[in-house]
Image 1 (cartoon, rainbow, N blue to C red):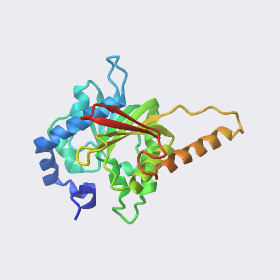
Image 2: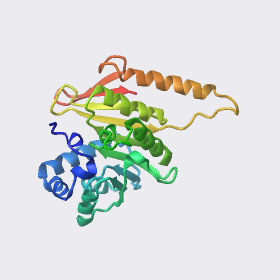
Image 3: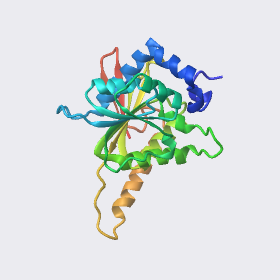
Length: 257
């Protein structure tokens, strides 16, 4: 059996009381979670004006990522499907507000409320059909569509993801683009199987105004989205604009969606 938790049980079952406490008490996991969150916040590129922003921590677990958000001076709302994880977060008295929720059913926040979002190792769970009623594409569409609606225009989301396959990668990214986001795939340590990390960086773009009865701009957007989505099925570095930056020790690729 695969060691990846998303292939062992649904998240609300896998992360029971025992697993939630084990996860939160691991010094190794705490360190990794902090590093991934710092990188996600770096890619979020919030204005450096000293004003706190309201962020979502999607799949917040026991609040490890939220602590890093708090240390960076921002407010946050964490949502997770595991009641056990949220109970541990409450015991730890994290600063953020906590919400028990299934992201695959969509987010119920007011339009334009959220200034940004991060998610560490969570979004790939939506690619699984844990119940007979689950359709991964529909759940991803519901999630990304509701996320887009609750974002302030120009807000950004950063998802650190572990897609199992090219098919999962295509599914996730095409649903994000279909919801209206624009963005890029950032890969840290692209040539290291052990250190490699993928971040999907999405921006809530401003809708293009159009005249009443004129569908041309919408048609153009649809065609652009189709072209972008088609590129995801190709091998990395082929069919996408790619850049490398950094030193030989740590190189990064940025693939424009």
